[in-house]
Amino acid sequence: MDEQEKMKPSTELPTTARSLPIALMRAREKVMAPIREMLAHSGITEQQWRILRVLSEHGDQEASKLAERASLLLPSQTRILQSMLEKGYVTRTASETDRRRQTIGITPKGQAIIKENLPQAIAISDRFRQALGPARYDLLLDCLEELEERL
Image (cartoon, rainbow, N blue to C red; front, side, top):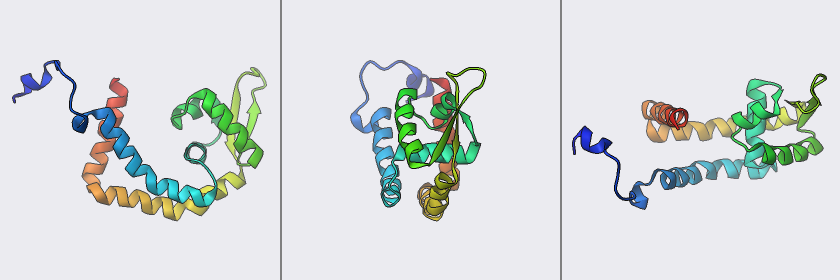
């Protein structure tokens, strides 16, 4: 099949073996399994881990930016943050100029969870990179980022 043929709109659905949404879900489950196992020992959820990771990496930020970076819907994040506030993992500060805006920050207790899991998280990440090889691993991330930007 030449390039022009490949670019024509399809007249039928791809098989489930070649469906991008299904392939992404299968890959997500394989990727998340060791992360879920790691988090089970810490007593936090995947979503809480993503929030802590983003706050640790980017510092205090507005709730809407945090939701975007952590790939969470804002209403879900609001619920998750309430639990994290109660456990002492994060802080929430209302803006002095606009009470609807809130800044979220990581506490030392939240940062300790990152630190405790860092060696295992790095090992998991290294296994993913080794599974594909560094060049293909980076290419996969680049392709996914490009797909996100184009959609």
